[in-house]
Amino acid sequence: MQSTGYHGSAADGEEPDASLVLSSLNSVFSLSLILAQASSPAQAMRLVITAVPSIAVSHSAVAWHPSKSGDYYERAPEGVGGLLTELTGVGRLAVPGFPACWAFPVTSPLTREQVYLIVIGSEDLAAQETFLLSVLAQLCGAVIASLEQIAVERSRTSEAELRGQADRDREVAEARAAVLATSEARQRAILETALDAVISIDESSLVTYVNSAFERTFGYRAEEVIGRDLAETIVPPSLREAHRRGLARHLATGQVTILNRRIEMQAMRADGSEFPAEVSVTRTGLPAEPAFTAYVRDITDRQRAERELIASRARLVAASDAARQRVTRDLHDGAQQRLVAALISLQMAEQRWESAPRRARELVGRALDDARQGLEDLRALAAGLHPAILTQHGLASALRALADRVPIRVETDVPGIRLPAPIEAGLYFFCSEALTNVVKHAHATGAWIRLEVAADQCVAEVRDDGIGGARPSPETSGLIGLSDRIGALGGTVDIVSPHSQGTVLRAAVPYSGIGGPEQVSQVGEGELLLGHERVGGASPEDLGRDVPDVGRGQHDPG
Image (tube, rainbow, N blue to C red):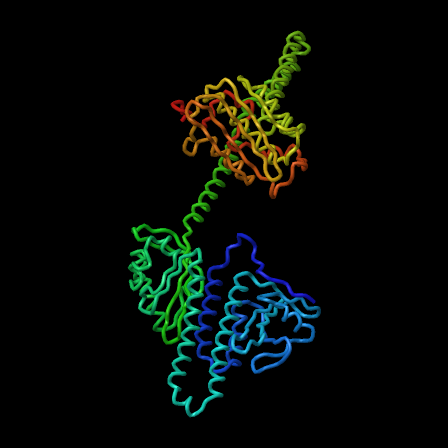
């Protein structure tokens, strides 16, 4: 058996559900109001134990003392009491034969009793749940201390003390007010650290509270909006009437339309500009005094990323279709014409073999020439789809062969290791397209290709000594296609091109989710044709063709 410190189990970077966090906060806040009205420590503890499942789903709670039982707690099972006495704060108890337990101190400052709120469940507590349960236990301890103080004072009541009853009642009221003030202060501290904008309104739709994130999101200062009508402040004009009707209908009939669920709608900043927002609203306050609190999250960046993803996928599909059409056209105009001519020559030779053998031999020779040229056309077409040297010998050999065919001096610094096939193909066509741009637009005398392979990513860089000033052309740019290809591998493409100082194109591709450099994908010919069609890339045979891409200085190819 052992006890361990505990800090929650939420993964780093995992964003908590806004509605669940808000619901838990409201549970703690509402319970603090009710605790202030408790008439005995046992009643206060029962309220806390009952509230635990609303904060930590699938968990239950009991109150244990290390060595004895009392009005509002039980004696801890044998072997657990010693573990409790060793705790100095919130801790997890590992007890053979028991489910997972977490202990939260509920120590009364008056009696110094070591009482713990024990939360039991089969799943780990999240960091947010641990924090809220710790706050709840502290609130319970403060209320119990206040009630025990009242009980002690009542036990000492005498005629003289009765004459001062008014003073004692005032002290009790002040103690309860202090508990409530502490609870409110804790809740406000939590809300101030929230990343989402938090707004509270009363039943008249007047703003009663906003946090710091609200000020950053909407551009108001808190004092500018407190007391103002919510609809006139952050609701766009087109939605204000619907907001007012919905609030009035809920207050009159209890009908729920948007409460306790996440919705997407437009919101309005102080300057009148609108933005897409994700909103979660819950009802707070006492039943006789309805109030509402909303979490608002600006989802402008999220929607932009979704649109960019959709556009990227559309470009990939369009580029793939264009590549298929190019292959069809090249087959028809090249190899197919050669093979048809060879077939015709052979048919004519067959017809003249007896009557004109010399002419027949000439036709056979011509057919052989056409067949050889057709085969060369097919090889060139296959190299444009996926060079055989890349599959057989890897990226280093393929890039050296590519550099040898460029009409300017190209130096390569590429390690001779094998990378996963998708990465090799992506980086090869990236370098091929980059060299095409250098030859067509840079007016360069030399270029350099460098590849760095680290533990978690590889970076390909193509640099030239040309005129610089490169910039992507709208939507037709090959650079956008390159970005899509590298982006499909989880990577990024950057361009640095100051005027008269050359251009650097850099692609960074992670290994995560793809495999390490020791893994070499084995693919067949059919897979190469379907799996490595060029998307914005250029083969060595494209060098010198009219491929629209990056413009440089005054030499924008359009």
